[in-house]
Length: 369
Image (cartoon, rainbow, N blue to C red):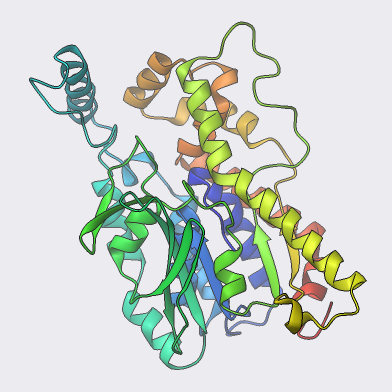
């Protein structure tokens, strides 16, 4: 289970790279199900394409994330940034008469080109058909229905599900699904699919563990992107927060709050099952184990230390939004697709996973509880 995290997902790459190094070269993917949202959906898709050779998949991820540049995600040249800013300014100044509101702040066409090169959907289909992977689930948000929609590419027929605010459907995954899942609101444009528009999967994903549970998972390895036990956002601010700080808080809530709440619900259900003498099947419940891996250090502080790597045009925009100070590190930590920062997060992910190697390896062993 790989939740979204923007540039913070470099940490997930590091954790996966460490786990892969514990297996012999040529070992297939040890996970039967892969579920991802936003940047996590992209990572999951690359892993699925390399299902026959797990370590090679993490090498492919590492190669891209270790050498990342913001220009590979969205256009940062002066012309593009000025065009976007002027469009927004004229739309606001004219009340939408001269120009309609822009579809997004950034042009993420570079991300589409990167994904066309780095995600092999034909290989994903081959891995599914060969039984090397049971299913890959990618979650996006429908702007028409307001639902969290999990698109599932599976090696077997799946039973679609529908619950309050969320549903799962069978689909042959493609580039549009990944672009939709990673379309962060306001920053990137929505994606049109099946006659409607979709955006970032984290927007309405109140129960991010739901796709994996519906697909029959018995154990969930969840790799998050927010360090545990840190001080409340804005606790050290003097005066009201800036727009950039509020937006950073919104992204943090978007990507992580649903996950924490869902894990707590899962633990309560497991406790209830353990205390009940009634068979699980008759309760409509079953025990699902989980193991959560989180960063050991503050990623916002790490991003602030590497802020100078951002293109000058983006730094100017962040200053305009009031996110150039250390208090704006939270927003920066999700947008800093630059190699100095991503390499730091990859190493942190490796170190954290290796520190918990015995625990993670035991969890991944079939039959262990």
